[in-house]
Length: 484
Image (cartoon, rainbow, N blue to C red; front, side, top):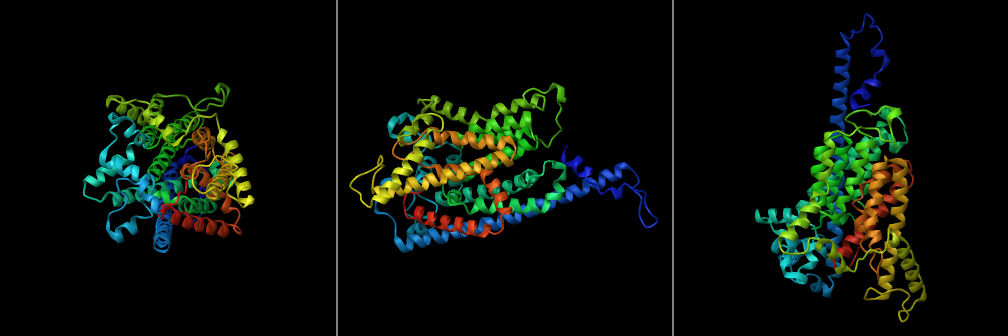
C-alpha cells in the first residue's frame, strides 16, 4: 500500500454516501481520488513545515549551549599546556585571542587532522610520515578544501559545513521518524497512520531534540566528519524507503567516501530492497512464491546498490595510483593500536576494563594499577573506562529497542555499524571513541524519541540530564581534555 492508496483507504465513509440536499455530490471517483491526493499533499506540506521548525529550534538551542559551555570552560579553566603535541602545525589556533576563543568548541583533536589534510593533502608517497592521515576519509576534507579555496577561513568553513550538514540530518531524522511513527507507536497497520499522527509528530520532535542534545552532539558542529556522515546515512535510508535507488546509491557512495563505516549501509539498503517496507510499490511476489521472506522481485534498479561501496573503492584506488598501499586506509588504524580481536569482543573487554576501573577508584590509591594503563593518571583512565562502558550499556538497550520497534533494516544497520568498533578494540582502552561512533547511529535516537514520548514524567529529567552532559563534554573538548 503506497501513501496515496493509504490515504484513500482512510477516507471518511460519509464521503462515499449519497449526498443530501445540503451537500455537493462528488462528480466521479476521479474527483474523490483527486481530493484525497490534495489532502495528502497538504499533510505532507504541513509535515515539512513542522520538520523545518523543529529542526531549527533544536539546532540553535543545542549549538548555543555548546558554544556557551565551551567558551566558558576556556575562560574559566584555560586549556591544557600539552595541547601543542596534538596540533603541531598550530592549525587550530593563531586567529587572535577572540578567534581562538570562539574556535575552541570546534577545533580540537581530530579537527587538526582534517585541517592538515585539507591544506596539505595525503601524500602517501612519504610513507610513515603521513600514514596516519589515511585513516580520515577524503570527502569532508575535500569539501573543506573547496570552501577554504573560496576564501573562507578553514575553521569557519569547517563549522559552517558541519552545522549545515547537521541541520539537514535533523530534518531527515524528523521525516523518517514521522514515516515510521506507526511502528514506533506500535500500530501494526501502516494504513492507520492518521490515527497516530499526533503521537508520531511528538516522537519525531523528541528524536530530533535528543539527537541535538546528545552528550556527544558537540561533534556535529566541530571540524569533524560526523555531521556529514549522519546527513548522508539518513539520506540513504530515506531514499531507500521511498524506492529511489539511484539516490540511495549516490548518497551511499558519498557516505563511504566520508567514513569507512559507510560500507555497512549496503546491508540495510539491500534489506529494504528485498524485504521492505517500501513506499514506492506494494510487494510484487505472490505469497506462495516468496522464499526466505523476500517480498519484492529484483529489477534493473537493483544495480544501483552496487554503488554504495564505491567511495571506499575510489579512496583505495587513489592510494594505489599515488604509489602507496591501497589498503593503507585500513592499516592506518594500527597507529591508534586498533586490531581485530574477534566479533564484538570489545563488549567483554570493555566490561572487564570498567570493572577494573571501578576497583582502581575504590582502592583510593595510584600505586597499584588494576588494568592496562593508557597513560597519565590511572584514576582518569579508570573514569574513562567506566564512562565508555556506560555508553555501551545505553547503546545495547537502544539496539534492543530498535530491533523491537523499527523495521529490520534499522536494527541491522546498528548491529553492523557497532561491529566495527566492537571488533577492533584498543588494548589499553577497549571502547575508545565508542561514544563518537554511537552518536551517528540515528535509529537509536528514533527509538529514544518513542521511549520519551511514552514516558512524559521522566522525559524532562532525561533531556535535561543529556543537555548537562553535553555542556560538560563540550567544555572538556574545548579545553583539550580527551573526551571520546
